[in-house]
Image 1 (tube, rainbow, N blue to C red):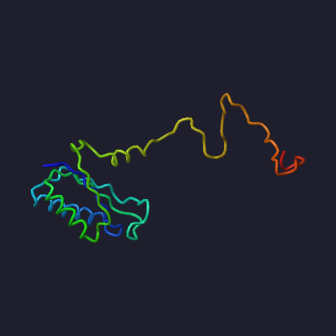
Image 2: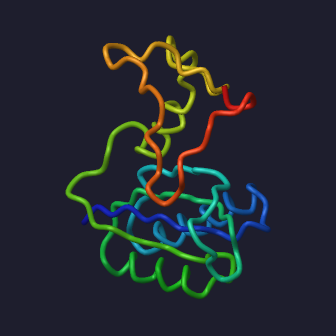
Image 3: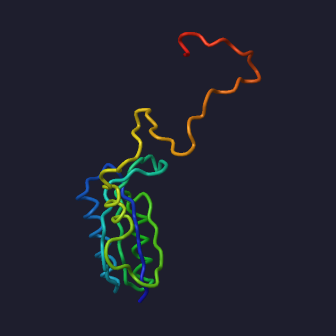
Length: 153
């Protein structure tokens, strides 16, 4: 049997429990056709890059499959028919990954904590190193030079 990774996106207006039930339904379809689901990951409700079938968000679920091609065809047929599934993608892989997928690992990376001595966002740029200050701006060619007023000093 071949290894596959199947990711489907369910509509945003169903609950997380309904998305999990949908994944369980697809798991049952694979098992009934002689395959097995090695791992199931729910990536949660995420924003879509662009609108898909009038949805801006979707529940992402990944299934790692070890199944024959006939089971995969039946799974994809059911995903096409189901109104709650707005997109799906299946990729054949040489071997299934151990541990969490890259999407679950990226969640941990977002919690980076303190950023050390990086400059603040309030306009203070801090030390410019060996570059020094830029100095005054040169006059623009399309305007006549002006006298510096009190408000510009």
